[in-house]
View 1 (cartoon, helix red, strand yellow):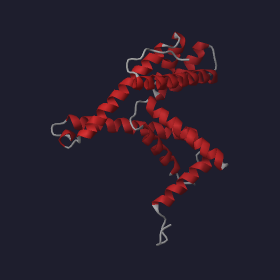
View 2 (cartoon, helix red, strand yellow):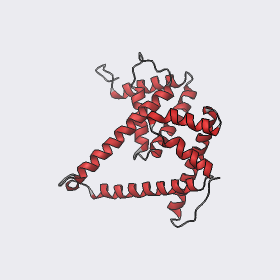
View 3 (spheres, rainbow, N blue to C red):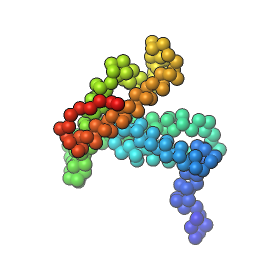
View 4 (spheres, rainbow, N blue to C red):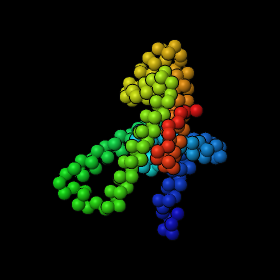
Length: 213
C-alpha cells in the first residue's frame, strides 16, 4: 500500500493471484504446484493452436481468471480456465488477421516497420514451418490407427467436439474416459516427438528422421 493509503496495482495483482491460488487448492504448496502445471498446459495449448507468444497468452488467461471477484463462484476452475483460454485464442487469431490486413494496405505498417521487427517475423515464420514439419513427421511415424485417432480427436470444431468424440468412442468400442486417456497419451507422445524434432533441427538441420518412442 502506498503512502496515501491507496491500494497499488502491485497489491491488487498480488491479491488476485492469492485468490486464484486459494481456488486451486487450500494448501499453499499444492496450490503453487497446480498453478505451475496449469500454466504449462496453457502454454502447450497455445503452441498447439499455432499462436505466437504462447507464454504471454498463458499469463493473460491466468490474469483474467485471477481478476474474477471473490463473490463470483467458480465451481470448476479447470473448465473455466479452458473457456477463457479459448476466448484468448480467438482474440489472438483476430488480432493477427487485423495486423495482416493493415500490412497489406498501401502505406500501412511497412512505412513504420522496424527492420528488426521484420527479422523477428521471419524467424517466427521459420519456427512455425519447422514446428508444422515436425508435427507432420511425428504423425507419420505413428501407427495408422493412432494417427487417425489423434487427427480425428483434435480436429473437430469446438461446438461439435463432444458429439464427435462420442462417435469416436462408440466406433472404437470404448468409453469416453478410455478414449480421452488414449488421446492424451498420443498427444504427450507427439509433444515429446515434436520437441525432440525441433531440437534436432536446431542442432543439425539435415539430421535424419526419428520415430516416436
